[in-house]
Amino acid sequence: MPKIFRIGQIVPSSNVTMETEIPAMLIRRQAIAPERFTFHSSRMRMRRVVKEELAAMDAESERCATELSDARVDVLGYACLVAIMSMGHGYHRVSERRLHQRTIDNGAPAPVVTSAGALIAGLHALGAKRIALVAPYMKPLTKLVVDYLESEGLSVAGHVALEIPDNLEVAAHDPMRLVEIYKRLDLKGVDALVLSACVQMPSLAAIPHVEAECGIPVVSAAICTTWQMLQVLGLDANVPHAGALLSGKY
Image (cartoon, rainbow, N blue to C red; front, side, top):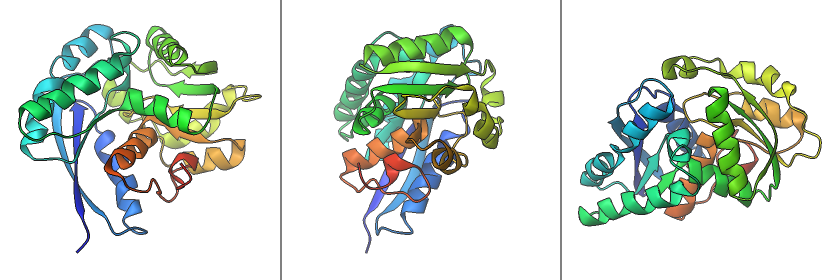
């Protein structure tokens, strides 16, 4: 009988993409590998992607970690990249340690992956030094993301801020529009493209098209989160049609 892994997801209340794209990737993996996955979520209140709401939302993450550990999940994924990055450089490590400790205190220890930390780890795994990115955020929050990534040793050569403040509007953004949007970026000398620096903005459908067209690895926050979840579970990071990072080479 194949081993079943329980995937816990800590999700902003208005996020409707993390629970579609990450399960979609892991279900694709089931076609080529024996492991099976179930998906379990706990929500933190957030409607607008502004710093005040992000900080209030992050304060709820410990409750979510405790609730998910009640379900004895095998890994927890914290969805909101910009919420972590808005709390200061290096905060993903603080968050991961704190939430992991809550699972320990609840008698059900589980590793914790943040989308912020996973994006950084995934880009480093690709050997990327110089990157470009597309984000749905307003310009000040996008600049905050750029600064955070550069504090982690990555050079951001260019970025596009789509300036969508409402989180449900972010989710409604057609992923195939990214096939044209990324062309606003000069990718000369760039090692990797982050097509969505946000787990709420859909991009999975566009990733194979853009990667084939631009000729460099293309990732998203959701792809990197899935990759790091598989890493901490000790499973091959091989997912069909999900870009270079999930090709099984890393």
